[in-house]
Length: 186
Image (tube, rainbow, N blue to C red; front, side):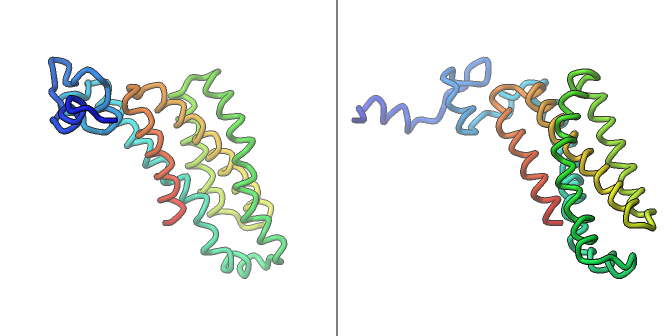
């Protein structure tokens, strides 16, 4: 049952104090922060998350790009349906071991170096796929890219979760998932 005092408190706009918040934390959950409420560290986390979202969009694109051109690859390399299916399926299968390796790399090398390794894999892998003239070369580089995607997914999530302020963490990590989906749709 709502009392008149509760109704008045819910209807009134939040009053921001010296910290930029009303003190109850509800505005962070509801997304009603004032522009000055985000700390410089929070702004840095938002910027880094936006940059990482570009990487994540490319990961989604790498996962989904082959579906549109598999017919041409099948004709060009004279692949059977089973071989073409293997080329398509190997990348998502390689995401799983790539994610396990990515977690280990992040713990042993650190988040930034692990991100750089993943970016290197995601740069070299598509070049190898483009230059590949055989089924096994294409399968190898598709698996290589899949492992890089799995590694990067884990490391990006870890990095965003560690640098983001608690009130922004969920939204910034959700942005990563949206980026993957956008990449697949491209």
